[in-house]
Length: 220
Image (cartoon, rainbow, N blue to C red; front, side, top):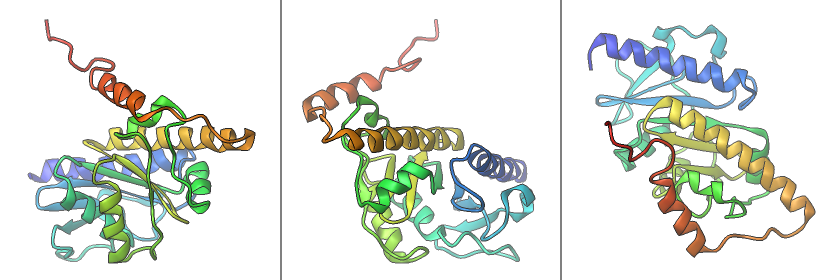
């Protein structure tokens, strides 16, 4: 990766973190953002306000977990970011947020089942709940990697949510989708047991999602 590409990546990480914070998706300094780069990742630093970030503050972490050169300290959650990139080559970016309703469900130890067909946006018939482990640990990293094995989003028990994508905009958009679904599900639960869509119907939805929007259109 050239210097210009890496600089663009650093700026994109900052822009995504600011958008996450300003939209209210993750309050204050909570959450973190990263993107894949050749031989590693770029991630937000630990404990710094997003408004104060400059490109040189974004931390490059190698795939072996080392932080080359004199850099800031990476986010305490760098372990699970790196674990996700190692586990799946098609992940290009990761957004971790403490969004309100997703965190409420995570603290209640509830996944998001197929109460609405849009749950398929995360790649399956539910948005799974990853078991609890202390933040910033290898144990949590292993659990997250497993939770994202065949999903593009998951909740983290007593913690928050994670969304991944090929790009930073895609990961951030999915994080917003997860929060909307979480809010809807919380409100459905207040009315009583939800009526869930069957696995067969969700498989139909997942197949239809492959051609949703402009996907599959010819260039003619």
